Image (cartoon, rainbow, N blue to C red):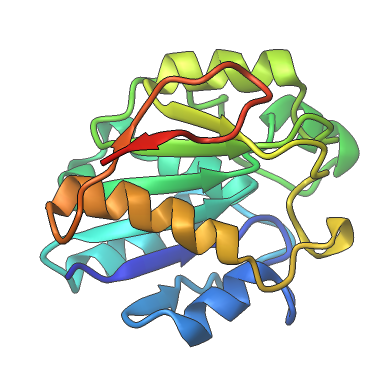
Length: 200
């Protein structure tokens, strides 16, 4: 089984965040730590992910918020060939994030290229960092599957997401369908606002 590289967003994922639970509880899961969580520079964050990927034959990504844009920035990077799939949770709009956190982020242009690896985006209907219309726009451009989990804010500690078992289930569907291990589940298209449907 390939390892799971966890990509937090701006300011990292604090203790109690579902990503920190994930790193402790899921075998083979590791947080890709950044030297500077509060004033991120895309090239620096990419370098850390490059290093993490260089130590593996391949890996899955589990990203949150700005970490999703880090994953999306790999559309044209050589190391993308090592990414087996990505769970992208509550991606943020770069323009909104820059407005809410001015003079803190150097992340270039909004990454909207088609991703060369399978991806499942998990979105919220009232995320302050990305509107529903923008969510759909990103998903279309990335070529991702989409599931929404209702009015879930930014799917972080502030909106009540500590240990998040549903996230484990979503990841297991994604990774299981790609690896062929165990009963396979096929991600099925679903209307916005619905829950993920699977077929076995």
